[in-house]
Image (tube, rainbow, N blue to C red; front, side, top):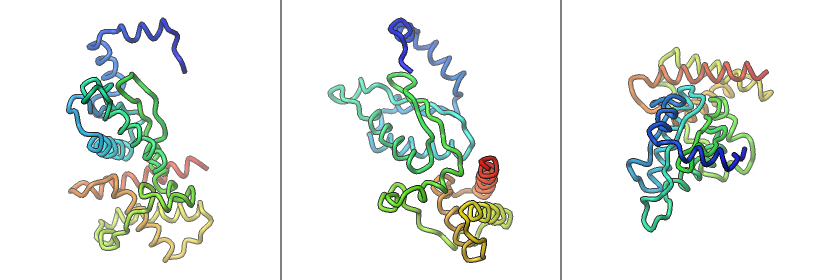
Length: 216
């Protein structure tokens, strides 16, 4: 929605500390990624934005803020971080990580993470996704799946059966096993190894299951 000239002037005139206070109140520190203060390269900015947005999606964030800056400090005044993040947002929307975004300020984006269930739907939405490295299903780690805690495998199994039913595919054991492995591979792009990985995987699988149930 376009603002009137008066509203735009009022927004620009707002003191920076006041604007920052409003942003912290709206988003909170955990839901904010500040790329402006560290001046990363375009590739590094895109990598950090993707890691942040994937983690926030799995954490169930409703809205996050990505601060890119306007590019005033870039070489020759040509923005590097902002277009790199814009490209990452477009790719992540196709991958089911991002539902949408808006320009919060000329130097930041307000981003809405997608539901977790969108991660599993993205590779199936079009045949073109198979030729796109961003959308291609990741390699399946069957040994890693076997090494999960029983409760984690049970959560992934329940989600796999529910997803197969939604697709009209019989929940025969080979199909269930393949779907579990696929879901595990997809979630491992957003959940990093560590002592809490199983707990995060269970929470993500249960959240996706709830989303599928609510969608009916």
